[in-house]
Length: 572
Image (cartoon, rainbow, N blue to C red; front, top):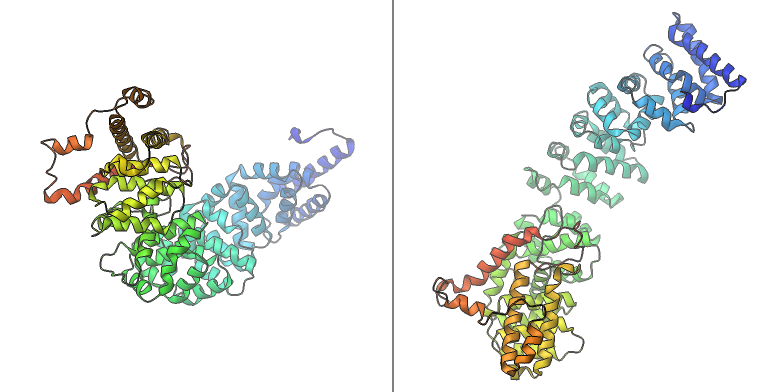
């Protein structure tokens, strides 16, 4: 213990000698009365100098706890030692011996009182070690549950996080019932501690979730909702989609009170769990609740990214059930939704990884089966001209499905007008030029000189060549390569149209390894091994291509923790 000493004075030496003598009486005396007298003397000294008492007597005090059961003075002295200026060092020394923790646990079981406060200090010091010991002491677990009415419950969360098995065993000792009873008369601060404890007990623990729902708690669920919005977090922990009993749990929240309040407070994560694979409630809210359609507009304005991801999942859910005929939804709402499917075609980071590849593929298949796809594309763009990223995603998409597009005059006029819009960037115009050239529009009809078209295409190509270094945009590698190859092919055609071989060398050799002399798509179509484009399989060509791209790349999109990605990353 010399590391605590700075300079030994006579008074200090006398006090330590006195403490040594008293602590020896506490440890070795054969008489209980003598031990109690020694304990009282140590307590009086601890009021003045808990530091020296800790150095000299701490371990002997702990050893006396099981012997002197008629007093709690040991707890008072230990509490003063742990709260002294050097309390952390004493606490580390105390925690070094597991037997010390067991002694405090047993003392709490038998006597409660001051030992609960000491137990809380130990839990906050090393919750994992304390929880692993408490788990092996069933009587102590029961005592903790029964003492909750007389504590602030703040120690529960670190204790429960320390041991997964303890989370299960403490439930069977009646902790849910105790917390529910306390919540009915608690103040707001205590209620928050109760909610945090419930979240810890319910999260990713199916047995606890099933036990909780058997308590017939519908009344208390509504009371919690009225008192504090944090109740939604408790319900989210309870509504675990991976639980085989999820449907039964879900049924407890299928009423207008919960759902309407969730809409008001923008808790779309909660609404998504209630709507998850719940065909009856989806149908009811789409056909009977007109305000549900406002969600399409809410999506644009919502700033909370976590809730926005869940709202997007919810909108996807509205369109993934073929037996729901959403006649009430106007076309502009549907186009609005499809815009965001294309803008957000990526692996959304939610707890469910919610964007299902099959769901997205089914939406695209539905889209390309529209009778007037070009009209659809024209209308979808009118809904939201939001950003450069959206425009790029839009044009990349229509390049992928250009084989299904019948060029109609309004659509062509719209794209040509886009090229004359001064507010649009060269990258966007470059992809627009690519689309027009891909659907075999004559260069003279675009009403722009060849140098300007070349500049647009080169700017777009530069963007895609450097896409990996751009933290704001992400496209799959195969799509990037495909778009670049089409830009190169159309650049070649423009140069041939101009018959400027010298310019061709200047432009094409800059950043381009090689431009093939024939259209790779046309080559694929003339390849004997390729399927006949006139066959019935023609309508599935895009679907097959997109599915292959999705399966190969969508799960490999950069996650939030990648250095080249952030929350604004989009994937087409």
